[in-house]
Amino acid sequence: MELFTDGVIGDLLEDNLWNAHFDGKIWSKSQARSWLERRPNIKWHTIKDQPLSVVQDVRRIREHPLVPSFIPIYGYVYDVHSGNLVEVPAATQAGRPGGLI
Image (cartoon, rainbow, N blue to C red; front, top):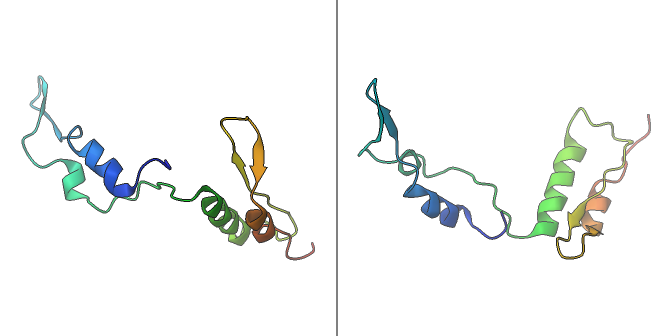
């Protein structure tokens, strides 16, 4: 999802996602506007900056009421070329334990 922006992915999908119409026997493509044209504010969750995205995810987990504050949370990015996990220090910092049992 880092190769696209919300606008680009929306534009790419728009031509192929027309409303389908079923007349009781066969499916056909409706000539009405596509569902995407009627819902232009879809959030595709594209990623502009992987490390920043990991930090945001770790913060979201850290702040969730069902996650105990004493559990450390770490953040990594998977390097597809080396097969290694690369730690995101800012994410690990954001996920450090904040209290005791």
